[in-house]
Image (cartoon, rainbow, N blue to C red; front, side, top):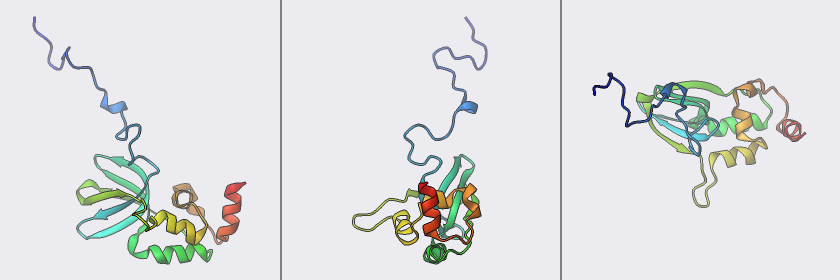
Length: 144
């Protein structure tokens, strides 16, 4: 008996067009707060994953070098719009979850402590309209 090309009865069919790259329990799924190390030029970015695909990573965030300036700006109620960027996979050297390291707080924890805002809500693309409202008034609105 001859099988048609592409017909393999021993292997289940896998429709990759309907499958997402992030499975259940995947720590690097949409909404995860991460630190990305890039090469050529070398830089680090802190932010929230919007999309992770074989082509690259879409992220909403800020360069790590300007993290402290960002927290001061947000704390002072200045307008803030997170950068929404795409990094091709060939530039990505490393992606790590933004987690505390022993007694050192994560960047997300530091952002929350300094601004009173949840990082995920501040970095959400729909949150790009952060005006000059004070962090405390925004935090109270989020609780309501």
